[in-house]
Figure 1: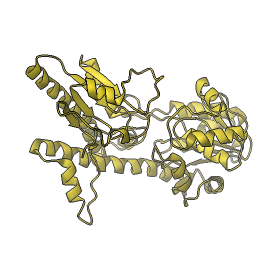
Figure 2 (figure 1 turned 60 degrees about the vertical axis):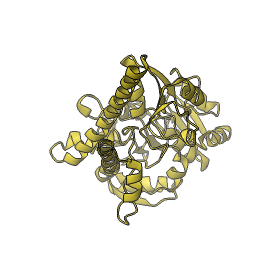
Figure 3 (figure 1 turned 90 degrees about the vertical axis):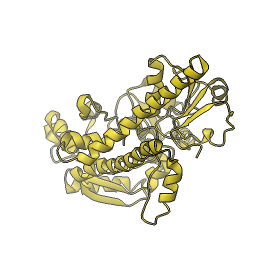
Figure 4 (figure 1 turned 45 degrees about the vertical axis):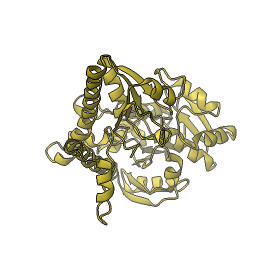
Length: 394
């Protein structure tokens, strides 16, 4: 398993729990050491016990270097660079690292979200250095479909779309996933599987953009958007999602740009949704600033602002592409007095964090950015100005 992050580690642990020997590879020595101690470096329910068990049973071990194997899974980041162009540096590096260890009959599977054609590119990279492997190895693409906070269950239960560079690769990959996936395995080609992942997250992005745009309209119209959505969703064919601070994470905030960059003229709705969701975060920042300005005019001093929630979604510690984190950092960079609250981050994090109750006591303005469970049913003082951008109080 190349990559031991939010997808790689749970996948490696699940596979190992089925009695298969797994070597997890990561560039971080800290991550490797942590896992080899039977511990985890991320927050994910039920993962710590599973990792402890499979490491203790010697089914999972971690290393900074790949070893010869029958199957190679690549689950490394695929961020974007300037102009939202996909950055495949991590994928290419992972592929080049495993090339010396490849043997005839090996199966290479890419799970990282990638632009259409990436799996074919992997084949080209491998055969350029190891031309003798032409026709002798199998290469496929199989994207994950998991919800952070419920990863183990969804890795095992969700259906998977599996596409090989040829029919033999597809069949080989399906055979492998049958070892640990109970969901249905849908066969296709690599290009369709790659696009399937991008389309799934782009669809979600468009739906969230509608909710976020609606929230800004309702704010101007002095309408409670949460009540409005509840009422509208009583219609049997309407299912409006919940608005928030924006859209974050390693998938929905990133994947649509892969389509936009490759098909700029055709992806008008997808581009607009991305722009709306990014704008929502800036809109939140301006709302907080205006509230702080009014406080200063009324009270004659600067307000202390509590940013409640930094992760990109509720009940996890993942900060990747987090709109809440962007709001917090933007306010701090502009000179505002802020207290950061993130109950899912460990105390030893480099970020300066404040406990929830302390922040509520000290702050003048309470800004709810993420609907963490810890924030629900709180008793809030009447003398605090409250901004709820995630519906935690509704």
